[in-house]
Length: 114
Image (tube, rainbow, N blue to C red; front, top):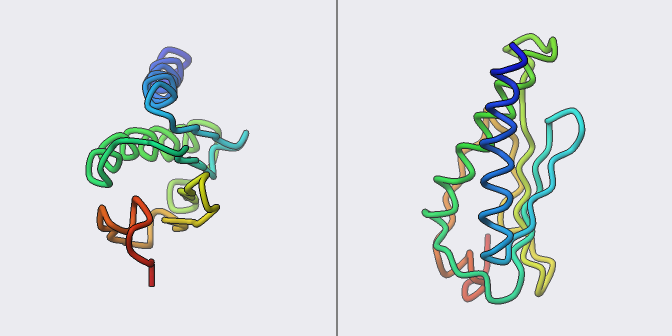
């Protein structure tokens, strides 16, 4: 079990380090139920590319909760994505349960989010 959790931490830490280089800060709370992404000015990745990376983090956090004793049906992660430049929350959703779709124009702040 320790190896499994260590592997998950490695996956998360790799994503955090890789995205810091692209100007995105990733914060995860201590009980693995919330991840906050802060997109810094000039962040260059499409919403779709980001979503692929986010799936790794979400999946790891949900699975880690199970190993900390949370019953699977009670596992959830609140995902918040903010742009640093204007503080606008691009995404604020709880998984599983909410689906969202963000266009590249909304992602970069060129179009308002409804």
